[in-house]
Length: 555
Image 1 (cartoon, rainbow, N blue to C red):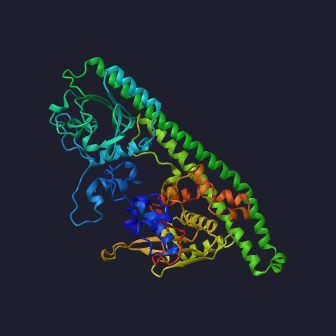
Image 2: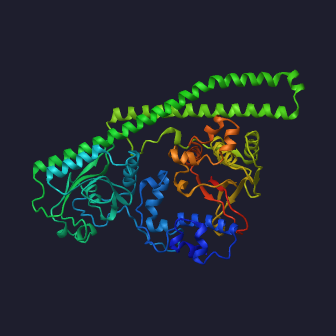
Image 3: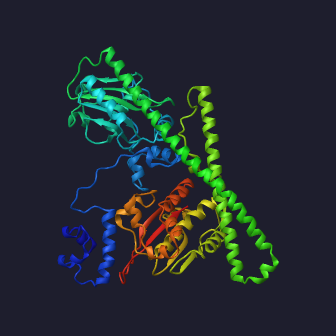
């Protein structure tokens, strides 16, 4: 039924009241029709209609990989092997290797060198950025100086060349296997000049030569960063051959324009780092200032706990409430100290690298700068039982309209290796989000071990799954769920149950709709090397209306 409905053109807008007209769902009751609406809505998001052509194969990017180890694994196994998901005999496709280099004027490709170059490129935070005038002006100037129809700022990525500016050429990227610039960054010469690509054995069968844009002449100057790597090129292209290539003055002009591009990239990176540093400083200062009133609160709570007269007057529930407040203040203190330590580590690392650069002229390694707040810290042990107990204590006084249950499967190990504070904050964010938006049904947290390949003695992953029966999330919001401040309209849509928020005041409402809760989960879990995600809740029996969401963390 889902397949038939998806292929019915009148249903692409998901107007389920019109479904009976297609003759597919006339036997379903209204409740089942609503359930089917959820299934089809999710299906349309995840797949394309069979009437539409399949999307073009996506080229890989260094931005797809969170760590150096992940990138090395991707470069070692090849693209098709990576996409085969464990097939017996995958066909390897090393998309970062240029197969037809002219070795008389080229360096041999090396895995470690290329990985360092890609990580350095990633550290410039420029891939997939919006167009910027400073780069557009340079390509416009290059087009006029050299009288060419195409001028590009091309960055050579893992499996593609991506254009920060592409004056005269459609599209922002091409596969790396077609890139002239992939040859330019491996050249031992300071420029790569191709007078007539249709006669050059390296390029005569290239799709960019045999079809649009019908490249004939190419000249590219490498973009050499301060770290010493060739990140890409500033290149000029003509559809007519230029047998004489470039004269001495033209070569110098192209080199200087490439240096201007690199200067713009360095300045852009420094500005981004300054903004990030300012933001980290603001957070650290706010955390420091909060510690003073927090210390006062903890001291006063300590006095209350030591007051025997007060202790004799309180019942068990009141004592539990007081201990919960003590626990909350302790957690706030730990979060504040963590923010301050992250900023301190950031400053120390910056100073260390600055001294290295001053003494050696350039950085000693090709590692990209990683902000301290997102680095993996030294991991410790987490007692799962104590974690669940603490979550229960903290979430118990939180305003909610439905029951909340927690379940731990029997095969979950009693102790895991992770960061207890980051894990606790992430799961607490899921629970508070679910409680805020669920007015009917229930909220359920389950911990279990997922083993995709039990036959291979796969140890699996520990999964924290938070399921609610709230009104659900609009499909158009899926891509931005874990993105901070995802826009005013989405922020309004996040107010899924305003009555509950208003009942407990504006501060509670602001906290749950600040746009940072799920982003905090993403940042924390990513820094631990884990994964996070979301899927809509679906009732496989289709016996009642289905609403709700399921958020997951794989640690």
